[in-house]
Length: 161
Image (cartoon, rainbow, N blue to C red):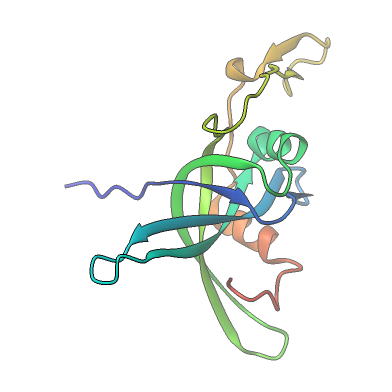
């Protein structure tokens, strides 16, 4: 039986997307999302609220589009998978965190409207300058080890949440 590691969340960005590039030129963006949950306590009839915070990482064209399109406070729908990464700080302390690797990011239309603009990109294997839309391009994700090494650079002392 195949295991499914997929997650979908709806929440608001807690910080601007940070766009970086791996040494090979692969784009990656990271940002945080706050997910609020409200309910009524059955015994006290009081309204309760809790907030969960998630770190999101995305790659390639998705990362570039997220960095261009999203801002702190934007309400988004993110689907992807849970990934755990571990690293060691300069002091030798071991750290790990679980984050969402996004496969799709969309604006939430519950309280906002958007205008969608399709990006035109040059095909990396087409030197004559012909453009292809995003859906015509192959999306290549870096190997997990390379992605983790590239992302971990500069994040040695980062607290998980």
